[in-house]
Image 1 (cartoon, rainbow, N blue to C red):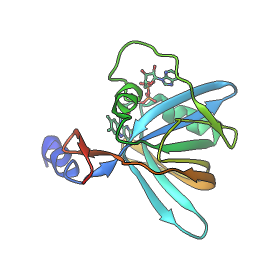
Image 2 (cartoon, helix red, strand yellow):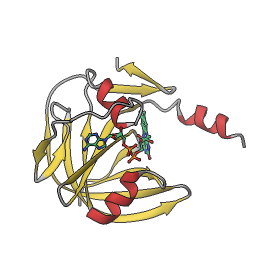
Image 3 (cartoon, rainbow, N blue to C red):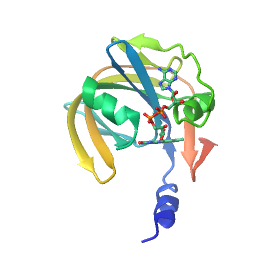
Amino acid sequence: MDDRLFRTAMGKFATGVTVITTKVGEAVHGMTANAFMSVSLNPKLVLISIGEKANMNRLIKESGTFAVSVLNERQQDMSAYFAGQIKEERKISFDTFNDMPVIPDALVNLTCDVHQSMIAGDHTLYIGEVTDLRVQDGEPLGFFEGKYKKVI
Ligand code: FAD
Protein backbone atom coordinates (compact mmCIF):
# COMPACT_ATOMS: atom_id res chain seq x y z
CA MET A 1 0.00 0.00 0.00
CA ASP A 2 1.17 3.49 -0.92
CA ASP A 3 2.29 5.74 2.01
CA ARG A 4 0.67 8.78 0.42
CA LEU A 5 -2.70 7.06 0.04
CA PHE A 6 -2.53 5.96 3.69
CA ARG A 7 -1.78 9.56 4.79
CA THR A 8 -4.60 10.90 2.60
CA ALA A 9 -7.04 8.39 4.07
CA MET A 10 -6.02 9.17 7.68
CA GLY A 11 -6.30 12.91 6.92
CA LYS A 12 -10.01 12.41 6.18
CA PHE A 13 -10.53 11.85 9.90
CA ALA A 14 -11.22 15.36 11.24
CA THR A 15 -9.66 16.08 14.63
CA GLY A 16 -8.97 18.85 17.08
CA VAL A 17 -5.40 19.95 17.76
CA THR A 18 -3.48 19.69 21.03
CA VAL A 19 -0.11 20.75 22.36
CA ILE A 20 1.52 18.07 24.51
CA THR A 21 3.89 19.40 27.16
CA THR A 22 6.26 17.82 29.61
CA LYS A 23 9.13 18.89 31.83
CA VAL A 24 12.34 17.24 32.88
CA GLY A 25 13.74 19.10 35.86
CA GLU A 26 13.08 22.74 34.97
CA ALA A 27 13.32 22.17 31.19
CA VAL A 28 9.91 22.46 29.51
CA HIS A 29 9.12 21.00 26.07
CA GLY A 30 6.02 21.32 23.86
CA MET A 31 4.88 19.50 20.72
CA THR A 32 1.76 19.72 18.54
CA ALA A 33 -0.28 16.50 18.28
CA ASN A 34 -3.67 15.52 16.93
CA ALA A 35 -3.33 11.80 17.79
CA PHE A 36 -5.20 12.18 21.07
CA MET A 37 -8.22 10.29 22.34
CA SER A 38 -10.17 9.50 25.44
CA VAL A 39 -9.77 5.83 26.47
CA SER A 40 -11.51 5.07 29.79
CA LEU A 41 -13.80 6.76 32.32
CA ASN A 42 -12.90 4.58 35.31
CA PRO A 43 -9.98 5.03 35.68
CA LYS A 44 -9.74 8.21 33.61
CA LEU A 45 -7.32 7.43 30.80
CA VAL A 46 -6.32 9.22 27.59
CA LEU A 47 -3.99 8.18 24.78
CA ILE A 48 -1.42 10.04 22.68
CA SER A 49 0.80 8.72 19.89
CA ILE A 50 4.30 10.18 19.57
CA GLY A 51 6.74 9.62 16.70
CA GLU A 52 9.90 7.70 17.66
CA LYS A 53 12.17 10.50 16.44
CA ALA A 54 10.35 13.31 18.30
CA ASN A 55 12.23 14.90 21.17
CA MET A 56 8.97 14.58 23.09
CA ASN A 57 9.22 10.78 22.97
CA ARG A 58 12.54 10.73 24.82
CA LEU A 59 11.36 13.39 27.28
CA ILE A 60 8.08 11.67 28.25
CA LYS A 61 10.01 8.44 28.80
CA GLU A 62 12.25 10.36 31.17
CA SER A 63 9.60 12.41 33.01
CA GLY A 64 6.79 9.82 33.19
CA THR A 65 4.29 12.67 32.95
CA PHE A 66 2.70 14.85 30.28
CA ALA A 67 0.01 17.49 29.89
CA VAL A 68 -2.45 18.01 27.04
CA SER A 69 -3.81 21.43 26.00
CA VAL A 70 -6.72 21.37 23.53
CA LEU A 71 -6.26 24.45 21.32
CA ASN A 72 -8.96 26.99 20.53
CA GLU A 73 -9.67 28.40 17.06
CA ARG A 74 -7.36 31.39 17.63
CA GLN A 75 -4.33 29.21 18.45
CA GLN A 76 -3.32 28.06 14.95
CA ASP A 77 -0.04 29.91 15.28
CA MET A 78 0.70 28.03 18.51
CA SER A 79 0.03 24.74 16.69
CA ALA A 80 2.37 25.66 13.81
CA TYR A 81 5.06 26.77 16.27
CA PHE A 82 5.02 23.59 18.36
CA ALA A 83 5.01 21.50 15.15
CA GLY A 84 8.37 23.08 14.30
CA GLN A 85 6.90 24.93 11.29
CA ILE A 86 7.94 28.38 12.48
CA LYS A 87 11.68 28.55 12.57
CA GLU A 88 12.33 31.50 14.88
CA GLU A 89 12.76 30.52 18.55
CA ARG A 90 10.10 32.11 20.78
CA LYS A 91 9.81 32.73 24.48
CA ILE A 92 6.56 30.99 25.41
CA SER A 93 4.69 31.92 28.58
CA PHE A 94 3.31 28.62 29.80
CA ASP A 95 0.71 28.49 32.57
CA THR A 96 1.42 26.17 35.47
CA PHE A 97 -1.40 23.77 36.22
CA ASN A 98 -1.05 20.92 38.71
CA ASP A 99 2.70 21.64 38.66
CA MET A 100 2.89 21.09 34.89
CA PRO A 101 3.48 23.59 32.04
CA VAL A 102 0.35 24.06 29.90
CA ILE A 103 -0.83 26.41 27.12
CA PRO A 104 -2.83 29.39 28.44
CA ASP A 105 -6.40 29.96 27.13
CA ALA A 106 -6.71 26.41 25.76
CA LEU A 107 -10.18 24.80 25.84
CA VAL A 108 -8.85 22.05 28.09
CA ASN A 109 -5.68 21.61 30.12
CA LEU A 110 -5.17 18.17 31.57
CA THR A 111 -2.26 16.56 33.33
CA CYS A 112 -1.37 12.85 33.26
CA ASP A 113 0.98 10.30 34.70
CA VAL A 114 2.06 7.66 32.21
CA HIS A 115 -0.02 4.56 32.99
CA GLN A 116 1.23 2.38 30.15
CA SER A 117 3.26 2.75 26.96
CA MET A 118 3.62 0.59 23.91
CA ILE A 119 5.82 0.87 20.83
CA ALA A 120 3.60 0.64 17.75
CA GLY A 121 5.62 0.73 14.52
CA ASP A 122 7.37 4.11 14.26
CA HIS A 123 5.35 5.66 17.12
CA THR A 124 4.97 5.07 20.86
CA LEU A 125 1.47 5.03 22.33
CA TYR A 126 1.29 6.60 25.77
CA ILE A 127 -1.77 5.96 27.90
CA GLY A 128 -1.97 8.62 30.58
CA GLU A 129 -3.95 8.50 33.81
CA VAL A 130 -5.52 11.94 34.22
CA THR A 131 -4.44 13.57 37.48
CA ASP A 132 -6.31 16.89 37.03
CA LEU A 133 -8.12 18.92 34.40
CA ARG A 134 -9.78 22.25 33.75
CA VAL A 135 -12.10 23.36 30.98
CA GLN A 136 -13.11 26.66 29.40
CA ASP A 137 -15.63 27.71 26.75
CA GLY A 138 -14.65 28.59 23.21
CA GLU A 139 -14.48 27.19 19.68
CA PRO A 140 -11.94 24.46 18.81
CA LEU A 141 -9.12 24.53 16.28
CA GLY A 142 -9.92 21.79 13.73
CA PHE A 143 -7.60 19.82 11.43
CA PHE A 144 -8.76 18.03 8.25
CA GLU A 145 -6.95 16.92 5.08
CA GLY A 146 -3.69 18.39 6.41
CA LYS A 147 -5.21 21.87 6.90
CA TYR A 148 -6.65 23.85 9.76
CA LYS A 149 -10.44 24.13 9.58
CA LYS A 150 -13.10 26.00 11.43
CA VAL A 151 -15.31 23.43 13.19
CA ILE A 152 -19.01 23.94 12.20
P1 FAD B 1 10.66 19.94 18.37
O1 FAD B 1 10.74 19.97 16.89
O2 FAD B 1 11.87 19.70 19.20
O3 FAD B 1 9.90 21.22 18.94
C1 FAD B 1 8.82 21.79 18.25
C2 FAD B 1 8.96 23.32 18.28
O4 FAD B 1 8.58 23.77 19.60
C3 FAD B 1 10.40 23.81 18.03
O5 FAD B 1 10.32 25.00 17.27
C4 FAD B 1 10.91 24.11 19.46
O6 FAD B 1 11.89 25.13 19.46
C5 FAD B 1 9.60 24.59 20.12
N1 FAD B 1 9.60 24.43 21.57
C6 FAD B 1 9.45 23.27 22.27
N2 FAD B 1 9.49 23.52 23.57
C7 FAD B 1 9.67 24.86 23.73
C8 FAD B 1 9.78 25.73 24.86
N3 FAD B 1 9.76 25.30 26.12
N4 FAD B 1 9.91 27.06 24.63
C9 FAD B 1 9.96 27.57 23.37
N5 FAD B 1 9.88 26.79 22.27
C10 FAD B 1 9.73 25.44 22.44
N6 FAD B 1 3.61 14.22 15.70
C11 FAD B 1 3.40 13.12 16.47
O7 FAD B 1 4.35 12.41 16.82
N7 FAD B 1 2.13 12.80 16.91
C12 FAD B 1 1.04 13.54 16.56
O8 FAD B 1 -0.07 13.24 17.00
C13 FAD B 1 1.24 14.68 15.74
N8 FAD B 1 0.20 15.45 15.37
C14 FAD B 1 0.41 16.57 14.65
C15 FAD B 1 -0.69 17.38 14.33
C16 FAD B 1 -0.53 18.54 13.60
C17 FAD B 1 -1.74 19.40 13.29
C18 FAD B 1 0.77 18.92 13.19
C19 FAD B 1 0.95 20.20 12.40
C20 FAD B 1 1.88 18.13 13.49
C21 FAD B 1 1.71 16.95 14.24
N9 FAD B 1 2.80 16.14 14.60
C22 FAD B 1 2.58 15.01 15.34
C23 FAD B 1 4.18 16.49 14.21
C24 FAD B 1 4.96 17.11 15.38
O9 FAD B 1 4.28 18.21 15.96
C25 FAD B 1 6.35 17.61 14.90
O10 FAD B 1 6.98 16.59 14.16
C26 FAD B 1 7.22 18.06 16.07
O11 FAD B 1 8.15 19.02 15.61
C27 FAD B 1 8.03 16.92 16.64
O12 FAD B 1 8.16 17.10 18.00
P2 FAD B 1 9.53 17.33 18.79
O13 FAD B 1 9.26 16.90 20.20
O14 FAD B 1 10.70 16.72 18.09
O15 FAD B 1 9.51 18.87 18.76
